[in-house]
Image (cartoon, rainbow, N blue to C red; front, side, top):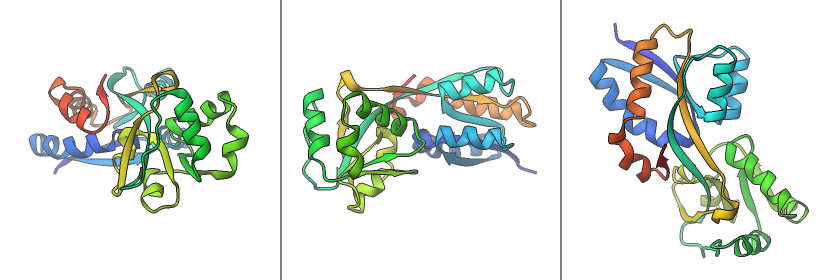
Length: 226
């Protein structure tokens, strides 16, 4: 009987897991069931009783699971950056400086951000800090999932999310990361659940995700190795 592990993963590293899982499955004669959602949503699901063999979330979420006694160790995988995308072929706004970014946000007809993802929560706080909350609220589209799809469909002029997630949407052009002064770096990490019946296999998969050999793939998917 083929062994199976269940991995709860944030959308931010979906492209990496989807690229690496098949080879691991072949090498270990196993199956990896991958469940994708935002880190916040996954933590809510875990709190409600859902579990698995491993989880890939923000470092803070993995630390919380360790504090709750559900995991023992954290393995950092990637560093992820918030950026923006527009519909493929559309004019790319200038976001090279904080002032240019603010002007681009004020000038946009509509802006999409994630509801529970780390980037969406950060962006909500950022625009409040910049004094843009009232100006942008009427044109803000808050949506869970791959926000770049809103831009691809023409429903949002600008999509704001982790670059690695924006890249998962067909029909968009990546404008670039937020200016350094406004950037938020998210570390995505992994851990193995104490209650896992396949802890050894789950730990092997986590170790494979963190292997230096995958650095080029991680960069290709819009992130940096941790």
